[in-house]
View 1 (tube, rainbow, N blue to C red):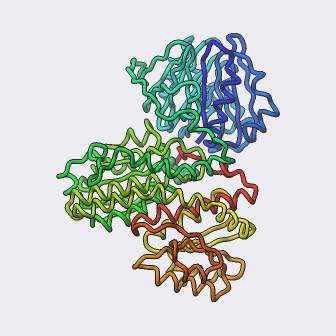
View 2 (cartoon, protein in one colour; view 1 turned 180 degrees about the vertical axis):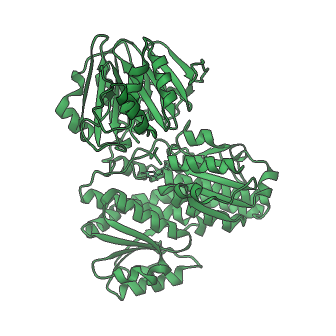
View 3 (cartoon, rainbow, N blue to C red; view 1 turned 90 degrees about the vertical axis):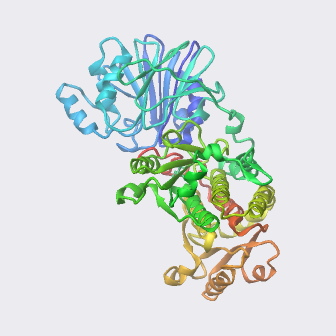
Length: 608
Ligand code: G6P
């Protein structure tokens, strides 16, 4: 959740650290802090607020030194106060640390340390680590960190500096931590966009690994202090991709990037009559034929993608699918075994609940395939195989392009499984591929109409509530539309299957309640959804409808309509979600919300 950056260099580091931590503000943004060390003194500045607010107050670049750490916090243990903001220190003030994660046994450790005379000055779980390092320090910082992490239970991405050492010691367990190999300087960070301007060469720390980072060298160790050989990997995103490029917000930029992102997701995975993902899926034809059930685990927007995936997979492959909230999965003794494939969907690849669900599935001998955007992530490493979404860095907290790319991967997997199982004849495979190839340009055409959606937002942005309704494969899109609105505009919104309206939500409908229908034309649920629209109108509700281009009849019935191009039913969600993303964005913008950093949310939730 929290953002971490560290740098050891031959030059002054505070300005660079400030620039880098700004790139990670989407991870956490209730307080921020920095520590720098110039070989003699170690100085810290921190406070509550967003990075720019705090910087105005404390002026981070006044900190001197060639080595430092910065942290942006998303509170877990301890209120949002200046004292609880990172970095944290020990009794002597010589040690300074930044941490992302949760120390589960911090209360016991704190009690022990207090008995030994340590004085605590914050309410955080993190502070125990600083005191443990102090307790175990005998002149070697790495050894002290190893001894400290040996005592803690829980998750940590950790950066440590000490007044008397020209090095950062970094450690990781279940919380991402990356080492960036620069030119005459080296970095640590919790997420690659932080350091992309300076280097694209990175090493991903594994669980229970420690790195000792100096200006010209990085060494890696396991928790027993044994030397570990690590591979340097090259990031294929560049710094420009992670910038706003003239858009007012990352969310808007990422919505508009969808045609390109989806093209990247498809790229190299299709020919005219085949889906080329066999190696990525990592299952033999025989294994696929033996699959009895697919379980999809995910959180948030990924879970909505899973619901669409359920529809796609069951429809085209006839393999039964269950979609589970990752956070609930392992608490109900799930029925999975070696004939089950578990698909974990995660943009960040770091969501703690999803990771825990995968581990549970692996314990029960299921094969775990992940759909992930961020390479080198924990979820990727925990999976038997990974199919990347390749949608490029997603910075806006509300997920948009990652969602549509996840749908594309699910579609590719569906058609591939259908073909391998022999339930999708060759001609259908060919048609399905042709349909998918039309999607990027179709999304482009929706985006070109975005001014119209902006006008629609202007009509409704003052409303306090909204209802989103859809049926069939568009029911998850109603959920996703409502989630987007809640996340970025703080308007209360509910997504519902349209037919369920009459069992409750209909009581909410009056002249102040906008109801957003995903009412695309198909031969399954369209006539039924027309009925639901009538029911809403006759109770005075305002109807905004996502309709299929050319549907004149429906256009005349509703208060506001947004049309989308026609494609096969199974691909409609990729199109119908786009106007809903834009609607949420423009409503939030009109309401003056901090769209890329919505209150209380974090981009990747690395705590359970
Ligand atoms: C957070 C984000 C959501 C995201 C969810 C799952 O709640 O704010 O946008 O959908 O986590 O994240 P993941 O990285 O696993 O897809």
